[in-house]
Image: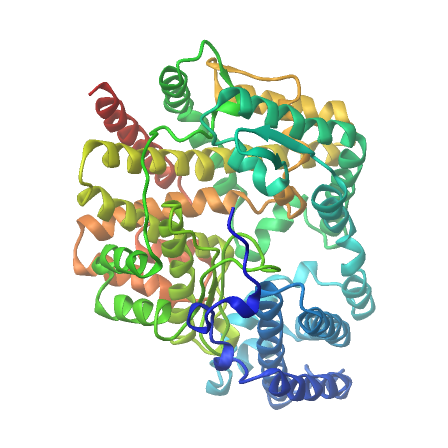
Length: 599
């Protein structure tokens, strides 16, 4: 195994250029001092927002200015820390801005309540003034929260307790990533460590006994801590319900959906449409069982690649060429911008180094370029799709910034997951069109199917679990280890179907999913993929107008609600139809794969 380089050993050209945010740390320190000195000015505006249109505009302009500065400072600190979390200066910088952001939020606790207190007719009249053009969408969304905004002192308490509310999530993270010891697994390469990160790699190994051992050993650690994990999750669920009750929402789920103005019907439609597709999903697992040649499919069999023996080597620059070629249907401006961002403008931090955050993400902001963190591996073909995925997020940010004022540029996660998975759909189509043989053709189709299973079916199962557990507590039923396991096991049985033979410990999976600590979030992955599949088929098979409507969606930023922006792009998430389209595509891919497998 080659040595992981330090940050200093990575070539500068392979790292991101953060100078669009700050030229150096000294410039950041100077702006941080300015931000820190501005925070107390918030008190000067307290009690003035409802006095007149001029008074409100004065505060909005000041708030917009300081918020923009706060975002810029936060992004620089976050990106520096993500690239090298072992650097003491990076740790200090992130800690400084995190504390300052908390102080700022507490000082501004009067902001929402004072705007909510403005007479509706007065506010409506003021907003007709062209000087409010940059703030109309923001204020319109804020007014919608009127029944759920508390008094100034209550809002201050809620702001100050936000750090306390994160304790279940933070403790879960420390327990599962720091304190829990999963041991080592003996392999032909010697003993290899079993960790949260390496577990997924073990689940993809061709040696079934090795997978089984890693699976059993991994979940044994969770079994030891199952009571603690159940209590932590109970704390997170009760926190969600507490917030919903305090802010006068009918349920925790409705509280989570309210900011995006997403009807509960969208959530319910997703679950029902996925249930409708269970016969296709079960057929997929039956195919897995057949290809693996096992009598019963085990939980540790579901992540092995369907096509074996495909070795690829894709240098980063070649990956950029593939992505740009695939995205050609989106037009010259899109391709030129993303190509420059991925190469000469250095939006991307490409390779692994010690202390660097794992995985990948895109970080967009109103100031500077969008930035992408990767841990790109030339021999991992999936990383080509990761580049396209994060590039989709970054281009969404680029279009949003270039077409909206600061108060209206920030889009929702509901929309974000469309732009990223849309790009993956185009890359898959491009690679299928250029596949050299049946083996590569089958490999790409297999990856597409696995991605739909992971993003549409699995995330919907998670969303259903969250819904059931929160509803149980809201109905007055206590959370127990046995109850959580029973609920999760029933979902595993329904989603995996008759060809799956679950292990005794399989339902412990419900205690290890970090997303559950950000409740009612994961459904957006499933709806996002469904929308992107529908939109990509329109763009690939439609007219220039279809492409322009999609680009218009990227440009809309946060100027409207996600259901409305997607409807304008050509997909109505208020109906189950996009989810049915996604499951229908899954069925067609399964048909194609079975034909290739029979050859």
